[in-house]
Image (cartoon, rainbow over the protein chains, first blue to last red):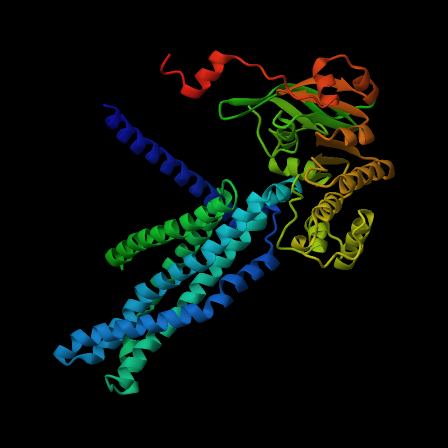
Length: 267
Length: 265
């Protein structure tokens, strides 16, 4: 009987904890979006200098890794596509497959996952360490709101930078396909170029960017939330950093599923 | 005496089910130095966190310059906080910024001053705490005492009316700790400031305090001047002043219960 109550009690507590987390994350997100979009009209200023510093840290410093990984993924997709399409002598359609799958899906997703691992974790670790060493309290006692001072610059930087990186990832992914098509499949450059250009529609590109904007909000908010919820010392920072990466990747995939379903059924 | 600048009325505070503060009533008057004395875990730091609005109480009210810290809007509270400084126990300097930037931050954020003016003011504040020439150092490069001084300079950046210090001499050697005490004394004389210090260091208490509040088990059990305290006959105060440990009460049954738990009884 005890085992019965333990099991169901545990499940119930888990559900309640989950609901509390969800409520807090949504609350935090609404407050930060309020500070970004409505705050400026109510006399709160956005700290552009801090935002710019974050853009450099999150965006510029991730350029090489995002470029290399999406190039490789483009190459991989092209090879897998060629493996199937060669049987029908239709290798020219590698261009369609690579172009569409990269712009619609893989560009935004890979960028988001790289940034979640690289910058989402960094945000959690930074804010978590600040919390442990009372720096957050110090900010509050100076009359500085942590949302305006810490959360808004990071969120804003993410929203600007992740779609930009996604465009780059799209280009590098398609370039990966090009390399395989020209050097291995011996397709003429112009034919492959034209095929890619006709295959990718503007809406493929745009839906990818819309997704990446939402991924950006997820990464920033989860990163910040996990940072603020650090308990204890260095160990707590480590735990929260792990939780930050795992939960933002999970939520990215989940949001991706929702958006893809929406775009697939409506457009 | 003049009008109280901080009023605490029937303050109760709890962590979970444990009640930390059990009905605190305390007035702090303008330009006085009040020291809150008490043993570790008696709730003195918690009291300070309540006053500056870092924690919300379960019951009672706190007014700082007439503003109810628990009920006021963020903007109202921030106005009060801008004109008060807080020295944290662990200094709480921003580790990603230089000492100079740390001190300059409140000025950069809250005043429309030119960068060159802010730079001069930062140097003045650092000079005041004896850290001139350390503007470009990172907090990690400073010793414990220097960090405290830098944090004090940051707390003073906005020329506050009220200065809160949480254990200013904790973790410092006696000489450095005395240095911090004399610094607070110097500030008290140089600027008209209300200073509220939380500590358990008797030496600093008798040096800086105008009035002393002794906290025990979440309640103020004594409030008065240094002389009142020295002449007091309250056994708890005598125990505190003479640094005597708690008497060990040996209750065999209670001890046994605490080891095996209650389920076998």
